[in-house]
Image (cartoon, rainbow, N blue to C red):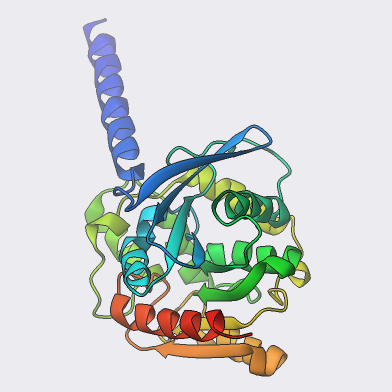
Length: 296
């Protein structure tokens, strides 16, 4: 009897430790800016606004939060642009991750709700990182009259990911796993050789949000969003990206859409991109934003 009780207590103890570490590692770092809330069909949409000037809405990667854009938002603010970095459904104060049957078009409507809150009647820029590039392109396709330009970082989505890299991507969400095992998986999927995985990229992974996003992608044919509307497109291409390599992303887009596409090639960067080369990314983004904001 005593053995059974002790085994039960041990099980409860380790389950508690697992739950604690899972919760702790799911929490992203604090996002920069002023927290705001919008509402669409019963779902709360949280986002962080900073700066003044033309609006740039920023959509993060799979299962990731608005805070991934902290450094880029600061650079854009300093260049005279206002940013709204969103927490996708299930992240931060955003709700609605439990909704079923959503497509990328529904997630684009979330972006449109925020755009109307922050810049009613104005054209905006939309920026998407990794999974967020799908939502950005869907928004630009569904609401072309609202978009001055679209900026895409790690712009994959059409060509399947190599099996070993896909496995590493999935393991990035294993927040219960020990750091010494999981960090190499995060690095393999997201970071170029020689680059360090920052601690905030070991946290902030939300499987519930990612599950919704994967389902929305699977429910939306690529042909409905791949073109990304009609506005100019900037592709910020990480040259060591193993999930969205140049031949599957910027090369394809340039071949298909020609002069509408501007490509900024970033060396020594993988799929994470933002924490690897923040200054080069900001430089390319600001150059594009200034050019397209002044265009007639």
